Each structure stands twice: as structure tokens, then as C-alpha cells.
Amino acid sequence: MIRRLIVSYVLLVAVALAAFTVPVAFTLTAQLRGETEQLVRREAATMALLLADRDAPARQALARVAEAYAEEMPGTVELFAVDGAPVSPLRVARPDDPALARALGEGRSTVDWGSWPVWGPELVVTVPARAQGAPERIVGAVQIRYATADLSERLWWIWGFRAVLAAGVLSVAAGVGAIVARRLTRPLRQLNEMASRFGNGDLTARSPVTGPHETRTLALTLNQGAERLDTLVASQRIFVADASHQLRTPLTALRLSLDNIADGVDDEYVREDVESATAEVVRMSRLVSGLLVLARAEAKVSAPEPLVLRELVGERLAVWRPAAEERGVRIVLAGDADERQRVLVGPGNLDQVLDNVLSNALEVSPDRSIITVRLETPAGAGDEVVLEILDQGPGMSAAEQARAFDRFWRGQGLTGRSGSGLGLAIVHRLVTDDGGSVTLRDAPGGGLDVRIGLRAALRVSPRPAAPRSGG
Image 1: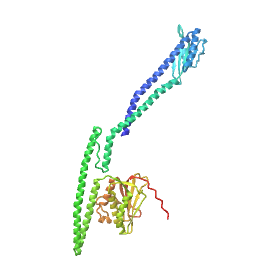
Image 2: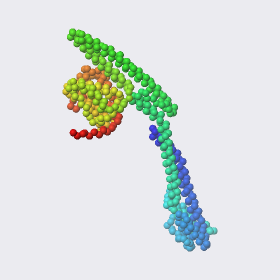
Image 3: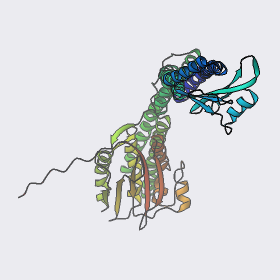
Image 4: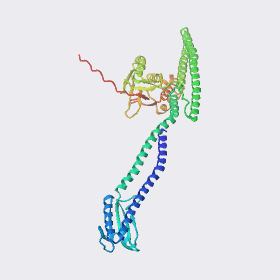
């Protein structure tokens, strides 16, 4: 928008300059041309009067005037006589010259600039000399060839000066336009900054109420809407916290009661019923926890922050490796991503994403299999860093992969029997809220590949490795 305002302002100034300077330049050019033509014609007419006088003093004066003119002016004088009378530098008429033939034959004066609309290399003025006492009789002609080099130089000065002046004025106009445009668009930039921060989860973002009436009104409206939304989100936070306490506490108490009952009952049938009820309580606890996490994700109460990806992934793998080792499952970290590569994620979001994906991968992985966690920076991917989790489980069909991110959908595998159907929905929500992407595909050799694309925050070259000491 700033560029368009500057261009519009400069175009307006350019039109005004053209409307003022171009007509003036044309007027000065026409004035220069007219004055020069008038001067040369006057000199030629004077010489024609002297040429028409047949006495010797007049002819001698004519010769001196012609020589002086040729020396002082950028031109030459040619005198022509039809009676052959001696005049120096007098020449016999040349019939092949149209201007001279017209002057000697028809008695007409001619002016030839050699080109239009400006002029050629020389101005040619031809004036007939009429006999004294008998104006109808032509006794000769005067032809002045005036070199226009000086005129061309003055013409370039007229137009060049105005061109340089116009360029200077346009440069100043562009500078002034840039200042004015930035001042005019400053409220809009502030509104855009506020909207960007707000869209990234910073609900405290507000826009200064400045600028013209329209932008002040818009800023007030946006600030009021942000206040109301902040209030609603705060209310939702309170509700989520209360729901977490109110739902988890009785479920925990119910599970403890069922465990006490199971410990004090010897009847096998009653024990089976208690264990079945305990399993349902556990599943309900997972479902409540998943719903609360999903509610927090949809509230998007925090803005993404730059976090070191490899450190964060390493911490979560350290938590999950003991559980994997109990079944002989190895969790391997691979990939070529920089050790200090940062990604933009909300606080705690990637932890929950990894916990959900690793939990599913560990649950479906057979004993003594491998779960591979790969960190990649694909060539040509721009500002994206890829996190992949590959297992060697049964995988998913194409139809199952298409529905895996739906809420409460459970597949036919192990996770379908014991899960809440919210794990991958939570993963999808948290990743996309941080500006990333998540897809499912078949892993090479069987199993599932969960591919998570994250926004890169900072790329730095790795530190050179310290030289190893010999020994």
C-alpha cells in the first residue's frame, strides 16, 4: 500500500510538472526560432537593398557587410545578380537551387529550416533584390546560410534544464511521498501487527487508537472485540481448570474404591466385575484428560515460541524409553536436522504431540521392534522442519488414515480397543494451531509413518567439532 501511495503521489506531481513545464519549453523553443528567423531575414533584407543599388559605393558597402557578417555570425552570405554586374563576392545565379530560382524568378522570399518541428543543421533565408524605382524587376538575390549549432545548444539547455529540474522535483516528491505514506499507513500497520499477534495466540495484543477517524474507529472496534474474546477465553480457562478438578477427583476416588473392593473380595466373578469397572474408569479418565487437552488446544491460549527441537525430542524419548525397554522395543533418534534448530511451537504442545504419537506407536509395536524418530530439514522446504515417528506395527489402511484425525474415531488395531479416539485429533489440532502440518502414510517395510511439519524459527550452522586428543 505504501508503494502504491508513493507511485500515485509521484504520478500526480509528474502530471503537474508536465502540464507546466512542457508548454513553457515549447513556447521558449518557438520564441528562439522566431527571433533567429527575424534576425536573419532582417540582415538579408538589408543586404538586398544594398544589392539593388547599382552604384559603386553601395556595392562596396555590400561587400564589406557580407564579409563582416560571415566573420561575426555563424553563417555565410551568398550574393547573386542577374545582370552580371561585378560585386565581390558576387556569384552568377544557380538555376538548380529552388529557393534561389523562386527569389529570382518570382520575387518571393523563402525560409528553410531544414527540418520540422525543430530545425536542421542550417537555416537558409533567401531574399530577392528589387531594382530601385522598378520593384517589379528583380536584379539579384541574397542568400544567408545560418548554422544552427548554437541554437541546438540553447535548445538542449532549455529542455535539459527543465528535465533535470523535473527529475529533482520528482525525487523530492518521492521522498515526501514516502514520509507521508508511512505516516498515513502507520495506524494500518499497527492494526496489522495487533491482528498478527492476536492470531498467534497473544490475546493481550491491543492497537493504539491513532490516525484518522476511520482507523481510530476500527482500532476501537478491534480492541473491544479483543477484550471480549479475552474475557471469554479466560472464562473457558477457568471452566477447564474447574472441570479438570471436578471430574478427575471423583474418578480417582472411584478407582481407589474399586481397587479396595477388589483387594477384599475373594469371589472370582465379583473380582472380574470390579476389574471390568476399573478398566472403564481408567478409560473414562483418559477420555476426560483427552477432552481437557483438546479444549485447551482449541482455546489456543498461548503463542508459539522458538524451542530447540532436538533437546525437546530428547527429553520426551528419555521418558518413554524405560517403558519401551520393558518390552524390548528400541526407540532410535535419527535425522540430519541441526542440533540447535529451533521450531515455533506453543509451550507444552509438542510434548503432548510426542506423548500421544509415541504412546500409540509403543502400543502397536511388536516386541523387540524399533520405533524410529527422525528429524529432517528437507532441501527446498523453505522454513519447515520435519519430525517423523515410524513404527513397525500393523499400520493403517488408506481408509483408516483418512479418518484417523476425527474425534472419537478408533481403528481396528490395539489402540482402537483401548484408546479414547482423541489422541490423533489432539495431535492434529496442536500441530495445525502452531502453523504446522501432520500427515499419515505407510512406513517403509510396514508400519505407520506419522509425518509432522513444523515451522522453523532459526537456522544456525553447527559448531565445529572439538579436535579429539590422541592417546
